View 1 (cartoon, rainbow, N blue to C red):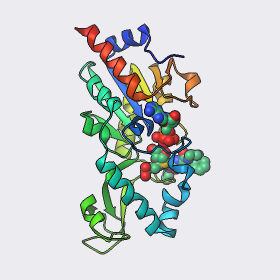
View 2 (view 1 turned 90 degrees about the vertical axis):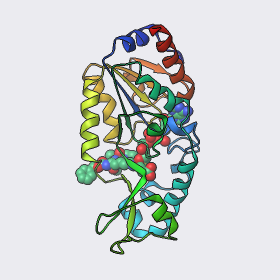
View 3 (view 1 turned 135 degrees about the vertical axis):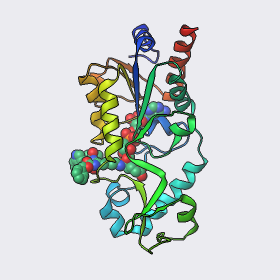
Length: 249
Ligand code: BJW
């Protein structure tokens, strides 16, 4: 195990036609966005079924909205970190690059990645549970408590995927397709325990991709990968991109 990319990885990247990066909360940790399952993660303080499920929302919508309003404010302030920036730069160095993210923070887009599949929705969107009308964060944060639809008065919820809910079909199908086509596949900053997203690296593995994991801690995927780069994504990914870039000069 190492924090430095192998010669094989660099050669495979230099020859790759399609590269995929699959990311989780760890890629945004160095931007100041809390992760879920690390020792100081969100789920050590809150129960997932209370905050990220329809049952929890129906039981206590005020509590769920209080949590999302706070996270919306945090995520509006944070900036992409060197890991997001490295992935955005990587797309200029390979013929085709897709980012598949479980994160709702929009930081890959903000760093400049252009092909991003958001499997768990977006903190920037909200919709009415009765009529489907979309509401901006400004519109919901201006209201106190549980926001109401400006059209029909129904209850508005964040456009994110809670436990027990299906992932957005088009994003999921695109992610599966991209993973099955990848020559090199990075799994970055995810504990790999939430399904169906956690099956994405295995689709790439079964299709013959070279699998690289970047994470300070091992995960259920670690023993299956071709290369495990142990450490923070904000240190490891820039080194890979810099080395790849200097080889192309
Ligand atoms: C760093 C780092 C640094 C730190 N650099 N790395 C058994 C029982 C009950 C349910 C199930 C079950 N088996 C399967 C299920 C279903 C369930 C599930 O998987 N549960 C498991 C937890 C057991 N899945 C679902 O319910 C999904 N839907 C579904 O299955 O639908 C089926 C269906 C079919 C037909 C009809 C209807 C339904 C939906 C899952 C939705 C997950 N939603 C959340 C919240 C999103 C909204 C929000 O954020 O508010 O998504 S939960 C949360 O976990 C969030 C994340 O995207 C997701 C994954 O977490 P992630 O990204 O991996 O973060 P962490 O914190 O776990 O890991 C961070 C990692 O980073 C760590 O490894 C660190 O080491 C590392 N790290 N610093 C690099 N600097």
